Image 1: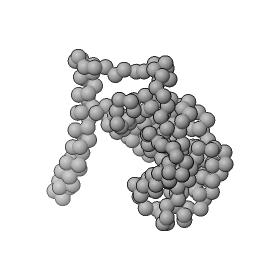
Image 2: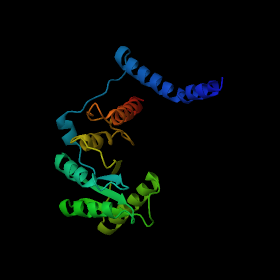
Image 3: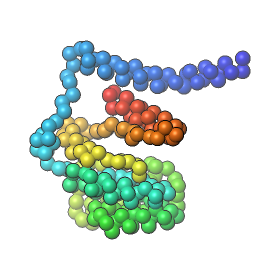
Image 4: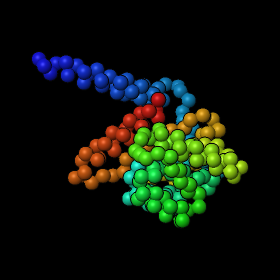
Length: 209
């Protein structure tokens, strides 16, 4: 009997996921069986025809020195978009991460470091706020303007065309969410694999809404 309230709470707590599942299923069914405007996939020519807006990519960090340099170097090399900058946020008491960002800045000219005025960690929102302030300072000092702001995590591999697609759809929408896909995970890394799949599934359902 003692487990009944707990079971009821678990059931109630899962209703929000059920609502999301229903909304996702309805969106799929409406596009599959009813006359609803189908998603238009832009061609290469259409993507190239839209002038490249200046994009700022925000990457908030706390103790991510092992991955951030590789993340920056890979995404800069693989990306097919030219007009973008990466703003990386860190804390003054995270020396290894600060050193990794400085090393990345030596390799890539459009990397900018934002250091919070206080020790961390705090919250991702706080970190992003100080990155935003760093972007505003750059706009003021260099007389530039960023048209689009994106957020990414330190482990993210950015698809080579994702910024081109965001640039295209920013002509039509105020906010664009691109799908998040989980990379293949070794069988023995079960917990990590389940988390990645669940995160990707949740993001995909949110996109369909």
